Image 1 (spheres, rainbow, N blue to C red):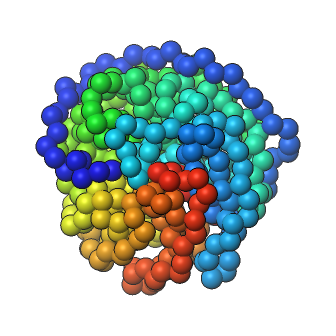
Image 2: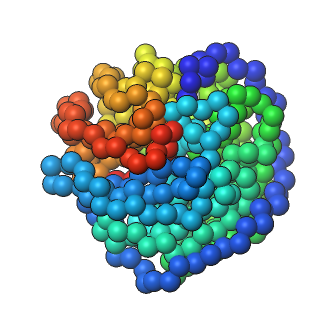
Length: 382
């Protein structure tokens, strides 16, 4: 995100109704092959290259350092939102790992599709390419056997799927328009930022960034189908961007407008209440990753990671300081054991490697270039 995210933003009228969007007409293709055994000791990074999107695989050594292990075509195109520099998708969750099914989901924003890979160690096999149900997909969320994709253009939409036999099955009646202003500019600050589930999976959350500065919460029924319209919580001036779950009904949220991390409780009726707030003192605070009780927010404008320790169920956020990265800090991921953090930096297309210390500080280990990934977003650590 650029420093313009800190400027005053005109607030849009709160959404009251959401209609079903017509899915984009995109043919699905499938690759042969059996289900993978799951990922381990690997980091996957998406290039988001408009000339041909790829996933670059890295082998993770025991000391946390990465070695490039392979490159895999998604059979789709990356995309670039107008006004973006370090963050061409301006979103979190564009590359998502499905632990239950050992699948990796990658958005192809320039093709309006999602690629599905089976994962075996640090190796990928393309199984399927499906339509995203809208224009310019930027984020994917999974809970149990339900997957949702967030589309950023034409006012935004979400499209739901179920997972069976290693493939996504589109549910045509699980498509909802977000009703955002499709003409708001700059484009990269006025498209939705992330789709994700609350921890226990009964609610679907979407951030709208500057296009309303809202949290949208869709209730889900037992099958995973969304309510016809979301409950809207307006956060004036906050520009909510990205989040990670905090327990069953909470969120840790980044606010690009205030350059801060905030804790929210999402109530059963879909309303959200702020519980804690901590400024980073940095510029363009947009992405966030959690490891145990530690949080790390990416500041694209400052090229830093801000650390926080969460306590009292997230009601208290203690700042731990800032760690420099390569230019344009965007998405980040943490190894399952919590020992290593990998930060994607978009200006030059580099992944920075860090060891996570017991006190929450980060020790640099090195960095890896990501071929053809300037402006790229999307990273997963296994």
